[in-house]
Length: 77
Image (cartoon, rainbow, N blue to C red; front, side, top):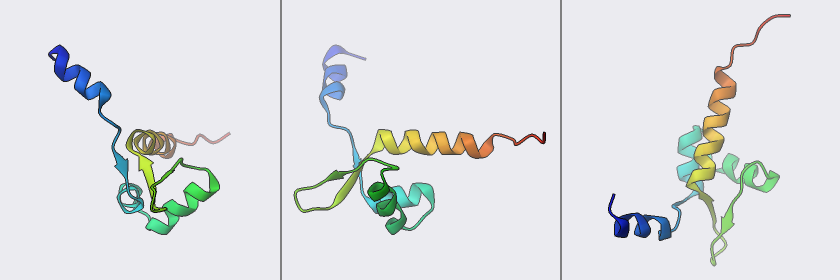
């Protein structure tokens, strides 16, 4: 990658997702995503208008973690 393109990507702000977009990724209702944010399970940012937005990197990280946990086989003791 050329230096100027790489620098531009480093300066570009992270994409913020709406509760609806996050809900689609987790296959839940948007109200569930709002409850997760209120409970502190996922971080959110408030827009000047009071709407919630979620950092894409944090959402993808949480999704990957939960997916790994769900796919880990449970062994009988």
